[in-house]
Image (cartoon, rainbow, N blue to C red; front, top):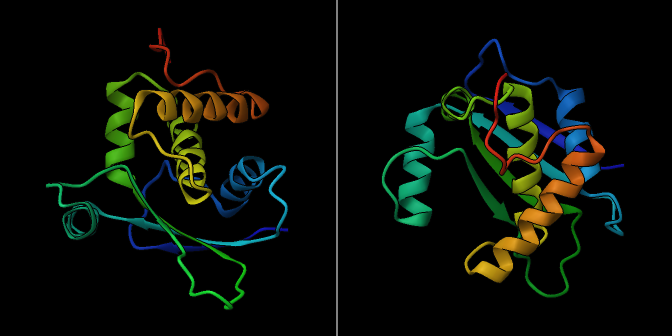
Length: 153
């Protein structure tokens, strides 16, 4: 079983609970050969902006930051990494993109877990591979393709 530690800095009415986050992480890790631990930190815009500036050299808050664990050789830990999610940004995005908030949360968490597993979207080929993986995982959760414009909520 995958262990999820949730650190909540900011709370809002639309946030998923531990059970929902666990389901999304477990579904994203289906087929991954190791049980693992992931820290999910739910933050406000100032903390997200600070981390985004410090680690990505980009201004302002972002929906998610992924921090894979990079252990020295010979050190064995089950920790896969940390996900830092900015709840206010997710809420704004869901509204702007006309998406169900819980579906957007699921997508962003799946996206972050895939980053922890080494997927990326720096070039078109990698982006397509990662997006197809996200779509397949979300489909298992009965969530529509997030890359198609939502017609209505």
